[in-house]
Amino acid sequence: MAEKEKIYKCLSPVGNTEPVDIHPLAPRLDKIDGKEICFSICGEPDITIALEKELKTRYPDVNWTIKKTYGTNPVRLSEEEMKTCQGVIQGVSW
Image 1 (tube, rainbow, N blue to C red):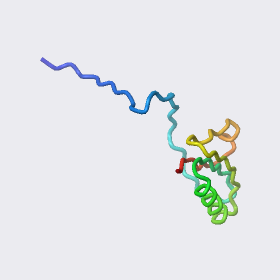
Image 2: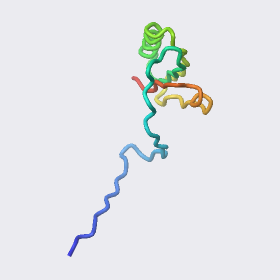
Image 3: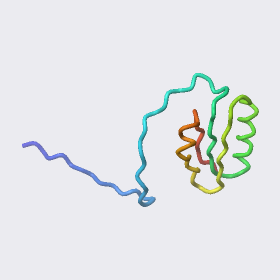
Image 4: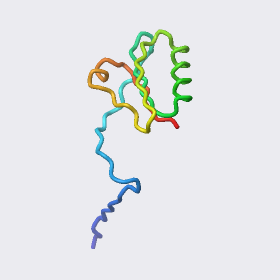
């Protein structure tokens, strides 16, 4: 007699989270010169300011769109930004 498959349900110890949409990875850019790249990061200003400055120095031909917050959640991109940006750097630092 075959045993019925067991189903395990787990709760996250950090609480309930909102569902998120899953999207496949976008194709890699062959180069970033002349592209619109959105830099969306949150965290401590001493880290994000230095990273922003370094990226602008290393890649002067990139059109940077900067979105920063100093909380724990990265700023979501607007629909317009999602349509116009060719790349995104998004993260949290603390």
